Amino acid sequence: MVANLRFFWALLGMTFKSATSQRGAMLVRAFFSVITHSIYIPVWTVVFSISPDISGWTMQHAFFAYGLSISCWGIVSLLAFGLRTIPEQIDHGEFDSYLTLPRPVLLSAAISSSKNTGLGELLFGTGLIIFCGVHFGMSLVFVPLFLVMGSVVFASGVLLFATFGFWLKQYFASAEEIYFNFSLMASRPAPVFSGVFKVIALTAIPVSLMSHVPIEFVFTHHFPLLGFAILGTLAYAVMAISFFKIGLRHYESGSRFGVRG
Amino acid sequence: MIKYFHFARISFGDHLKNRLRAFTRFLIFMLLAWVMIQMWRVIYANGHTPDGISLTDMSWYIGLSQLMVFLSPRIFVTIDDDVRSGNIGYFLNRPMPYLWMRFSEGFGALCGNILIYFIFGIPFLYLLIGNVPDCGTSVLLPIMALLLSASVLHLLFQIGCGLSTFWTNDAVFIYHSYQKVMILLGGMYAPISLYPDFFFPQILKFLPFAAMVGNNAGFLLPNTGDSFIELFLLQLFWIAIIVVALSGLYQICLKKVEVNGG
Image 1 (cartoon, helix red, strand yellow):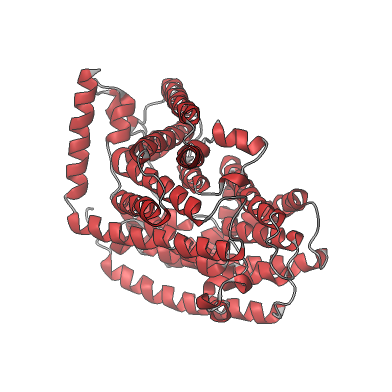
Image 2 (spheres, chains in turn blue, red):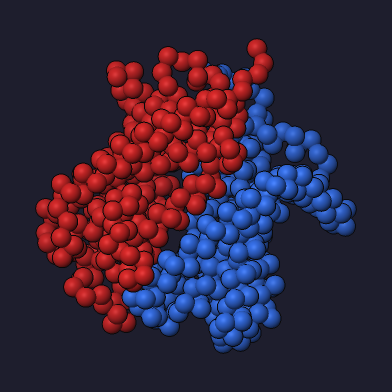
């Protein structure tokens, strides 16, 4: 366990070193990432100019939820972008190199690459959360915990859906679309999810654990709710990792010839 | 022209053959359409009804706006991959411009999506909403025609995003930026006519984003005052502009291609 942790930090350091070696590109992407995500502010301004609230969900909820979801997207892009490319790596047979390493395959595959737009997403998301704290007076005490929880949920969701790539060929384009919409769903108003979709949003696609439950906790300070969210996050992570291990057994080496045309 | 037709034909067949990809996309469309329509249901239930627009019409507007995004294939991913992997070097040797080869492939896949989404997507929206638009089902035919040309425009924008890989090395990030601008300026979450005055909705409706999304779905809303011909001509105008711009961009890109090796 300690050895794995040491390996994790070393790998993370190397990935960061590689990502930040192109500082100019990283900063440009971070800047454009902030500009891009800022567009959601006028989008929600339009919606809330028509309806001041959506069953109690107001502008502050929308901004906080978007801040959380985009920060988690940024954290996963920065620290574990490899998770998002698992289906592509499977299709290209790139898992062979991880299998030869003496450490957990998942750790190597997840942390092997980083996406530098993640910095902009993280900066924008945390900026939006801080704005909610300053402007709307929302409590920020538990935000670090929410970010860790949300990132674990999002990373586990990405891993779960990426693992289908062990059985499905040419799946990576579909997978990328699923991840993007997973994150997008987390920023949608909580009152929209009712009935069977509320159950889905808490289990199979637990976007509620990323944003809806933390926001409810900020307003109610109902600690059993937070406990439930932490347990749900851990259970989802364990399920995703177990599913990946099952999938890995189906991995067929990429030792194949290529044809270009 | 026949070679472009064959590229489109093969891509059409290939697109329909990959059932998993089609099914996954359709599932995402259903989920997104459901969430957005449900959001408007909640807004209407709270009594915040926009003047003159019924819940049924609003739901159809939102559903059709979502549908438009799913009609075009994600061609920018293919171009991004070609540029980054260097495979573009193999395609440039062919006796047809790479740009229009990818466009014809995209158009073939678009036709496949049209088939899927018009056959299954529109009945799904009907089942979800529970009613036809207030002005009757006949309004859906011109909207479907507008959606087709809007998707061609969307496809051209995607190719532009794909070509940006020559400078950014990441078309996905450029596409996400474009997508968010489209959400705001196209009126994907709410009809442009409901935008506050400081957004200048009267100007927004002439931009290519509205020509792709809001104007088409907005055709079923009462009191928009737009005719089918006007909307179609606006789309053709933007298609012509983007085609010229893409051709120029493609020539610049060709100068940036460096082919190494033997």
